Structure formats: C-alpha cells, structure tokens
Image (cartoon, rainbow, N blue to C red):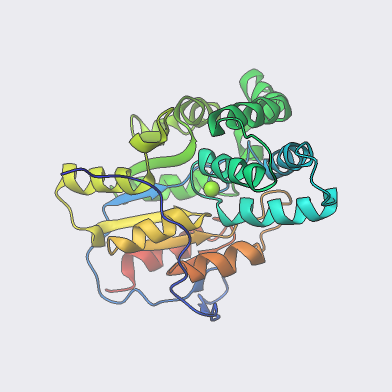
Length: 297
Ligand SMILES: [Mg+2]
C-alpha cells in the first residue's frame, strides 16, 4: 500500500465560528464541551506561534519576497495588489510546511507568464532572509542576553510542567525544517520536556507531515486517538488532531504583542477547523489543565 502524506488544504467544518462559553474568570473559551472521555496520555504541540516566538514576523519576510518575485514577471499589477493577493494565500496555507507556500508562488509566477524557479529555491531565498531577521534573537538566547521566557508564548513552561505532572508524553511537530526546530527547542530550554520527540519538515517534504507524526504516536503506543491532546495555532494540526478523535486546543496567540488577548483571525479560523477550546496563551494553565483532566469526572 502506498501512503502519501500530502498535507490537506483548509477545510472548514463549522460555517460560522460560534462563540463558546468562557471558563469562569479565565481566558479559556470552550467551543465544544469535552464531556466524559478517556484520559489524555499523549500531547502534541505545534512549535512556531504555539510555543516559540523566535520566528515571529516571518510573514513580513515572506510576503515582500514573493511580491518582488511576482513583480519581476513584468505584471502590471501594483505592489499593493500583489501584496494583498500574496498575503491571502500565505495565510491560507499557514500551518503547512513552507514548501507548499513556495509551490503556490511558482504557480503564480507561471500564471503571469514567468518561468518559475523550483519551489525549493524560493524556500531557500526566503529562509536566508528570515534567518537574517532572527539571527539576533537566536544569538541573544545563545549568549544568555535574552531569557527564553521573552521568546515563548506566555506561561509555556508552567503549562509543560503541569502536563508533565499528569504523566503524559510530550511531542513537537513543526512545518519548519527539523534541524532548526531541534536547535530552537534547545535554545528555548524546552529539550528537557520533549527529549527525542521533536519532528520537523524534511528536504523531501513527502516524508513528513503532522498527520504522519500523529499516526506514529498512536501506532507505536497502541493508543486510540481519543487519548491525544493537541495544541496549535495553525489549522493543519487542529484538523489532524480532530481527524483521529483527539482534543484540539487552538492557540490564538498574539505573537507580536503578547497581549494576552486572542488573535481574532486565528481564533475564527481554528474554530472553523474544529478546535474544541481556544486560548490566547497559557496564562490560565491551571484551570485549563483542571478542565482537560476533570471535565468528564
Ligand atoms: Mg504554528
């Protein structure tokens, strides 16, 4: 049997994001009550925007790079028009591996009569520029000039400590290239939580997907999807977790401001993907853990 792991497109399961109820005195919005269910044993985290803020602002690198590339085809569209179009499809594809955004760029170049580069070439150009932008942050962490807390979604560590106390296994699966994810997990001091369970994109994008990581967790541990809990700020992980019957927590993180308020666009989109709960960050990790482990009690 040939299994392919092409990542699926966004597929809304909810027509209009209904407002949930808030756990009293907290920022935790419950979209779907958990009810009585099996105990959660394995917990999967997306990385960028869900734990790490090292790559915050990546879109302000990707969009101009794509606008430049499209403008070079000689199209008559203004930079503004191109910018809006690009922003839309980049956001639409967020959560998938970067290469998918670059495949789309290549298609848009072709549509405008240009001859595109291979998507992997575009990905490299983008990545070089992004690394330039975030080199300072990585260096600040490495040298100790910045503390990991400054570049984490608020209260990530207390949440992870709390999860560890529940005795669950923790995993990271990211659409960013694996060596970088591993390095940034270490820079943020999170390696003690995840150990060898850190997965990311590979050069051959067909050999990795978040769905594949989920598959492996369930198979290797002989557990049903109902025992899986997932945290993510992208639709892919929410969709994948729900597809196996797990519990999905949408992290509508405000990456730039860390305001403690949910990002409206992420919230809407992640509810649309089937999220059970929405949090802006982990400031209310205590009621969150209590709810996740006791709701059905
Ligand atoms: Mg993310």
